[in-house]
Length: 241
Image 1 (cartoon, rainbow, N blue to C red):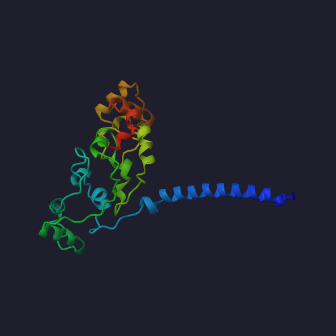
Image 2 (cartoon, rainbow, N blue to C red; image 1 turned 60 degrees about the vertical axis):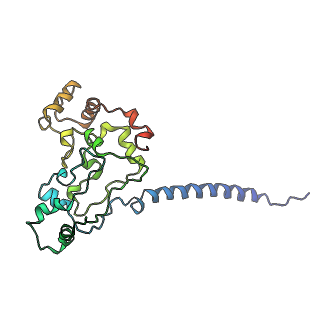
Image 3 (cartoon, rainbow, N blue to C red; image 1 turned 90 degrees about the horizontal axis):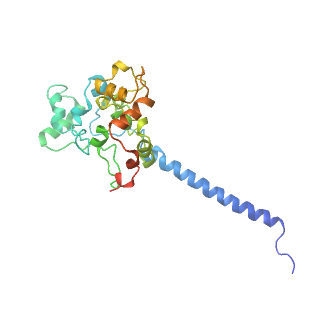
């Protein structure tokens, strides 16, 4: 029987198969990039709020501690959104006629909460407890970035699972002394004299007395002292309950 297809059809068939494979791989790669992009994660995108509250002004400028507004961050799963009375502690005396603060004054008059826009909002299937992370040496800026430099707050990181797992798999790269959790300027290397007595004792027990202290030495010592078990941190049920 005569050959139906020209021999060159073999080349076309192979090119089509390989081309389809590359197109499929490319589509998957593009989908992954889109999924991780600010368009989806909203990372690095400042959120409009009913009141243009500036963390840069209140934290960097005035020097307010995170806990002044986020009072439950050390004891609760949720860091807490400050009630209107917290705002009015100052603004019943300062900038009392400022137009931008009218939603706060209206909230105070009507006893209705200001409807703030949630910036860091995890899916319902992911369990997260602020107090656990604070107790284990995870600083505010580690997850939230340089909030003290943000006129309007944005999400610093994607909050995707792989971002969380980077810390859960290697907590020694990220944790800091508990007394420095709310220090927005914390960084290593850090001078030995800048550490408090408890942290110096932890380092000495681990055989570390270098000056300055590197994260490579500080992290493992704190992981041991704080009883952090990495194997447990990678258990699915830690976050998906």
